[in-house]
Length: 281
Image (cartoon, rainbow, N blue to C red):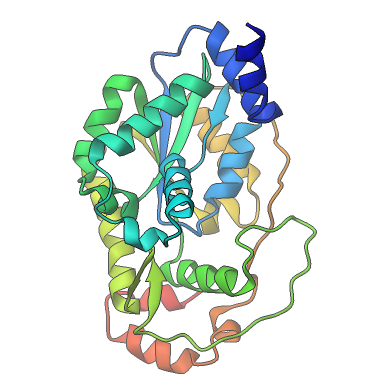
């Protein structure tokens, strides 16, 4: 028994409490939730707020953790892991973490479109694999596509993807190379990146009935009042709202025109596409 406790404690206080709680509680059979997004949409902030709720264990991007661990052990970049995992690897990682950590709480996990591409899995197939394990709630978190691209580049250049609410950051500007956009751990063009975002939004809409899906938008539900998103999620999950602490701030606050040094060039490129409205924020 002592050896088991010692093994659990080595993972840290939060992990230890979650493992102990999951071990003594009867596993929850339904109500688990999947958050779908493309990154840089406020998902970390939303997940952190939900994880503060006593009825929820929020695991974040479960499979992304596995990817980082594997890349570090091999001494390679995550881009080299495309095709290295199977669909079963993705789902079993989620189910394992859920069984080890959630107990009788709602288990929340996140998926990005490129996670599915890495294992060669279509969204409908993935959702079908989750439902028998009690995933009955699904959230799609959207954001202005150009803001996502810019936020990712700014965060990468600063090497700081998440900041505290009181962190002061220096103003930054850069030229955006429309032929060299890094998303999903792969290089692509700007228009292709925007199309990938749009395709995923369309896939989500087609794959999930409206009664099972909560659609949130960063600009409407998180940017000015993050608690608004938390309230909506609590209502969607049928749990009481407890006002959480907001632990993360904005990584970019200025307009696209102020950040992009070649704004006019990018605007001209986007104007001729179906994504012209994405340049308005």
